[in-house]
Image (cartoon, rainbow, N blue to C red):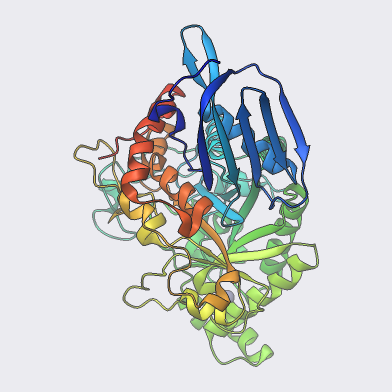
Length: 490
Ligand SMILES: [Zn+2]
């Protein structure tokens, strides 16, 4: 019998399987695999036995079979010219059904090849939802049939903030802090979108497309100023050139503006087969609505008391619109303010507090109102926040989210036991104001995404941080070998 003692390296799996029993022995990597369908195994779960008698994978679904394969990839060892697997018995299944990564292609555009690389890495870490932020104040990244001006104007901006500057709109310094360089046009065609949807599906990843409304629509308004309350503010036909929150939003008193969003979402429903569509709903200033005759006429017509109720009205409209097309709707936490159907999913980004002047819904309030929630608190899941490295060549938006902080996330924190069924899982968010390219993006994503992937996979069964860090040191070598610009662990 060929007995070997397998070193720690071989079993340094990320995410750690729920149950792993190390056995003595090893088998060649080309050993045929026997697949079995076993109905009692949970969705996406699997049982993997690597023994000298052979390799067996049991699962109840195709995703479980796929994830067993991903575990085998991590177990594979090289000895001279030969590859082998150490003998193990693994029983594994995810704690949460939503294990997400968000990519912001709007502030900076990454393009198809980078998105595919993200999807490959997500699959390796058993992450299954890519939340794709496709529209923003600073860029509109999807070509919509019937609206050619969207990419003509919305997908290109005349300048962007220079590295190291934080200009604000209208300030004296603003012009000096802009780089004067045309950015774009950058957008995805229908063929690109279909290619990426298929690429993701092959990896058991569902794409969750996000079309922001009624705020963060300035790039769309630059293409169609008539959909703003004050079209004259858009006479430059340029998306917003600086970061931050834009006051010009969709005019909710204009039926044509609402019809435009319906047509966009109708198209999105046809291109993206996933169950969920994201409609943003965050950071929508009400200042234009307060003085717009059309919006005020709408407030009177529907008999509501204020502009918060006006936003809830448009949310209800699009929840109904999308549910009629077989979709569920997700949005950022503040879109649940007001009378919004319980079927709407919330994405909680301010679980740790709203900040001065912000109104928002806590996750506890949301689940009590019957909403399912995806936890993305900026305190643990915002990877554009500084990671606290000794040396770091890249720029961040601010904040501090260390690797250890990511690992400490408990998506169910503060949620009463009987309401935890509403916590679908979590997601890391990669906002790109200060992220220019794939090197920058990967440095910020990895290894912190590994920590969050393990949290979403294991939930409260995760081991302590020291255990994760020991495995992560080995796993980082795999990422570097795969040409990922992974940051050091400290
Ligand atoms: Zn208006």
